[in-house]
Image (cartoon, rainbow, N blue to C red; front, top):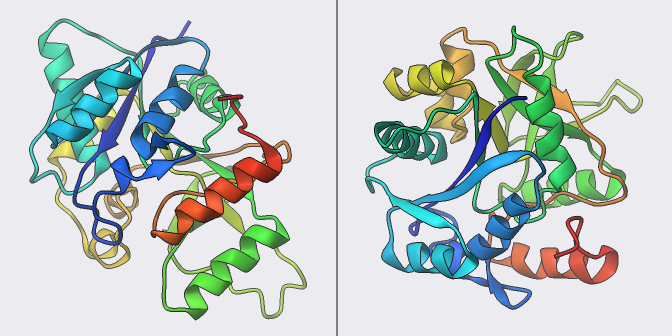
Length: 263
């Protein structure tokens, strides 16, 4: 059995939506909702929150998990997860797989995380992340956001073997001549073997990561493979809290479809 832990990175000063981790979502702070989604995952050793803010740490405690204080200078969630995991290893924790379930992804179904953990049965996998085929509705939301000059979800371009070729906040690939080529929605979740997470923390930011604002591009810019794992939506739509209006959008999804984790 793979020994897996989930670390939820949660910072206060998000550039597009400051304070979003404490914004109320269906009666709970966003970060607390995400923590409860993490706790619904089967086969996980423990769930932690990595944060730079005392109020978020208190929300984590109220939700029933331990928080780890990390440096406000962490540039993204994976750096924050790497710092938190280093603190846990200093206490004696050793995991086979560390999962970065981003604090703004409260609708992540447990089965998606479980599928990502299962991907590590392949010893060639060092980094894995889920993708789901865009529904027409999700694709329409992506394009509507871009038409308004906003960025919402992230798309992934993948090889025939499932290796990530690129991630973007644009809708890729361009489908003007494709007649309906699949667009893959990247779900805000990463999993790493400890060595890959340590490598990430040592590598510099590159121009693609900086320009797109997508942390996973650091792996691709340094020729480190990322396995994209196709997962099933099972009738639910994935959406992260990127902008203030996403709160109402997610609450509407919860009202229409219910919570994928039954929370």
